[in-house]
Image 1 (cartoon, rainbow, N blue to C red):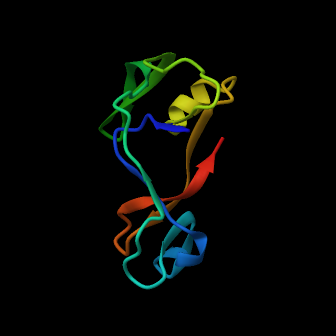
Image 2 (image 1 turned 45 degrees about the vertical axis):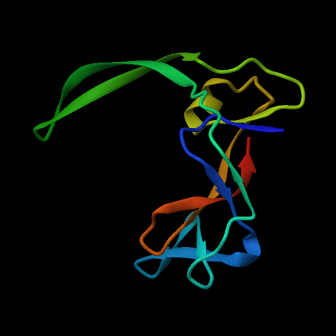
Length: 127
């Protein structure tokens, strides 16, 4: 069973229905777009309402060509449900990176985007 801990629904598409997404005539790694315009996801997972976050603090460290430069320090994860047998939590990449010891966490894998680059969904999950 999956629990979507992202703030939006996740749409899953079949690899046979997409082609590599191109920008300026070149394929963009990890992004795909529908072969024939619109496609329908084969599965959608609604958000669970539980959205874990990684605590962060920022410190202004200087200026780069008149733009403020900050250093961000990441702390502990907040709001991550406990590991439960049989439940896979779909989370952001930052949550996965901050909790490498957890075997129940996954992130969306290979974005599917429309012709303007707006995210429609993904091809699968990764850890």
